[in-house]
Amino acid sequence: MSDCIFCKIASGAIAVSPVYEDDDFIAFPDIQPQAPVHILVIPRRHYNSLVEVEDAGVLGQALQAVQKTALALHLHSEGFRTVINTGDNGGQTVHHLHFHVLGGRFMTWPPG
Ligand code: AMP
Ligand code: ZN
Image 1: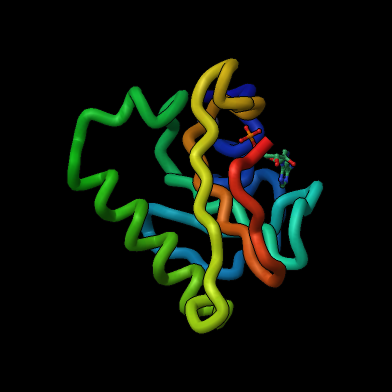
Image 2 (image 1 turned 120 degrees about the vertical axis):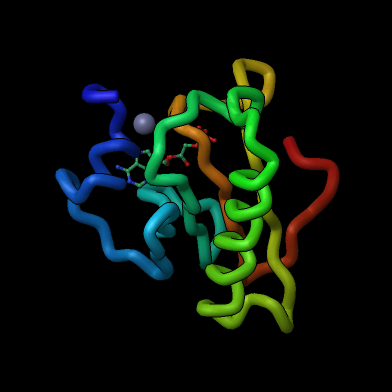
């Protein structure tokens, strides 16, 4: 989608500093971090949200990209949180599927 900011990041039109990337996914720091480590993992292909993905393989690959991102950042020993905001009630503001990876501090529950 030409006006989608995450598509522009995925294509390289907007430069980011990737912490993990492969042919299908790219992970980069959130511009408004909510934790000492706050990374967004996105598919290069545009999906509006989680509910648009019909291919279970893509969902599996996405979680694998999250896993690889956490491992690359050494978040796995202390733990981390993965968040997928979906739609208005979910608090989704960017309508290109993305996985928040938050770490570096204790995460409270329930979320706000
Ligand atoms: P959500 O509210 O789940 O849709 O999350 C969207 C996230 O994208 C927010 O945490 C924003 O801070 C983040 N964000 C928006 N624009 C950019 C950008 N250009 N680079 C990095 N993160 C961004
Ligand atoms: Zn997009």
